[in-house]
Image (tube, rainbow, N blue to C red; front, side, top):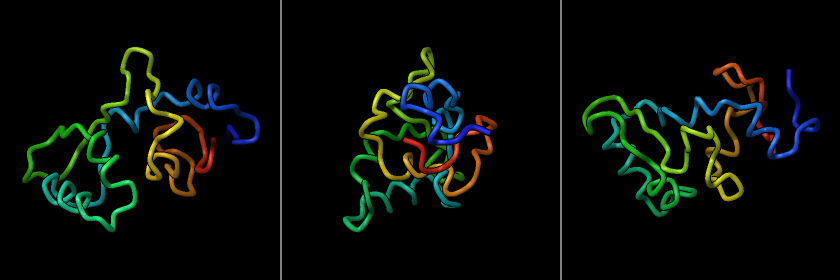
Length: 107
């Protein structure tokens, strides 16, 4: 398993295929409900997240989003240094379920 101390930022980006950036869910709500929640001034990084989301599902369906900063050719994040908390904290204290082995809290 890959550990944070063994990786620099560029190595984390290489070790992680970015599958969780290509298509992801936010909570168990519809796409419209997620967008409304993110518009709340109480939401951490809400405006940033709103600008990065690409809806991949209809507004009334369970939400699936892509990320505007995700480059499918290089498979790297174009905003890695300034990514929001939800991205920095993924996979939220567990090993990534997409199989890359990167743990939460990596650079």
